[in-house]
Image 1 (cartoon, protein in one colour):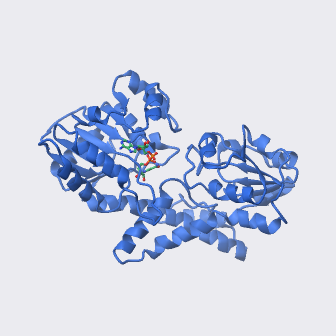
Image 2 (tube, rainbow, N blue to C red):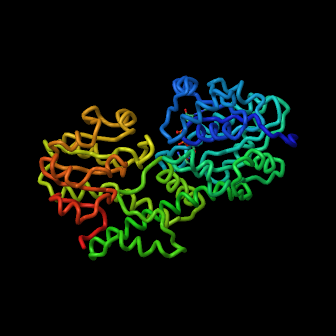
Image 3 (tube, rainbow, N blue to C red):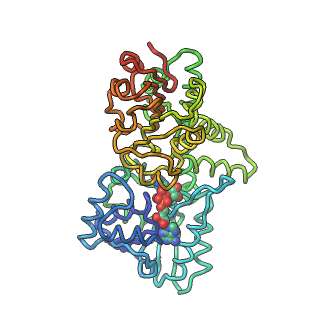
Length: 441
Ligand code: NAD
């Protein structure tokens, strides 16, 4: 790489999902000239008219601002975007395959498109979460398919943003991981990130790839550990929230990710735990900690459904209110959400499902049978219901007082997968209330 000093770089980003779009918009916001590429024409048209195809707080405003300033462009024409870029960030999906391994076909397609297009030296940055060793393969693949006589370096720069706070997380990231053995590549990435004033950790490419999995899987493990303990708490009369509070004061443990519930979902923890287990297996090793986290999470997603099945004689003909569909608040993403496991089971048993979510309804319609009725308020879903399941702790749901359940439901029977309400308050309001790992004190 011959580029020595460039203040405002010409960057391209492949993929405009949660990672690519947020990165592209934030790079533009700090002054770089950015072209975002996607194969989805609808998405590109939406973004060119200033509409964000995903819901993230503050994203659309920044998108509009930088579009108007001429620093941000959206196109499906990858050739025009990659041809003369200083650096290309790859942020396409790496979804789970049936065997648990990561699907790298989207990465490979972009790599090939880059190889066949580059007309000048370029730094390729893999932001997608990829198994250890993938950056090496991407570099060899691009070099094999290069059409012009240009120099290419591939660096790993995994992303740590959390959906629901993606823009904030980008500007306040705990660290930027730069994985490369090439000094020029390292310098360029440091320059690209310089305006963000964030701590930078430089490691080799394989360590960078591993840091991403190690971090995500540790958080998944922490959640599964708390869920495992919550199940034991129920059996022995301890209260998981008190236990978590007591643990949280220990700085070695920390206060975050100690909430018990119906399990983690989303596009990252489920697939990244399985991908790391798969990688281990490929090398003849059993990563038992992570395998346990995966198993616990699978069972946890149906914990409330099982509790309700024991309590009720049948779901057939019952009106079931489902509050919250997305895998967590602040996002419209439903990938691996507990609601998607539970609702089909309820429908199969003859329940009439009335679901409320403030932003996830459109995406849910694509994933679940037409039989689900979507309501525009939680109250509407609750009216006349025999049972209620809470799967996401949206503010709109937390704002409902216990008396609302008592007043609106035909029978106030509530299964809360996010431990939103104090047991005493629900008890006082006359609601039969079940949650995860808690005891009435
Ligand atoms: P996503 O599925 O939301 O978006 C991927 C986008 O890439 C889609 O818009 C798709 O149309 C586009 N695409 C596919 N092929 C393309 C091509 N050849 N050229 C251009 N665009 C193409 O994915 P995401 O959630 O943003 O995740 C992307 C990667 O980042 C994954 O590896 C994921 O594990 C990782 N990651 C995700 C998060 C998160 O919170 N979602 C956080 C950190 C890391």
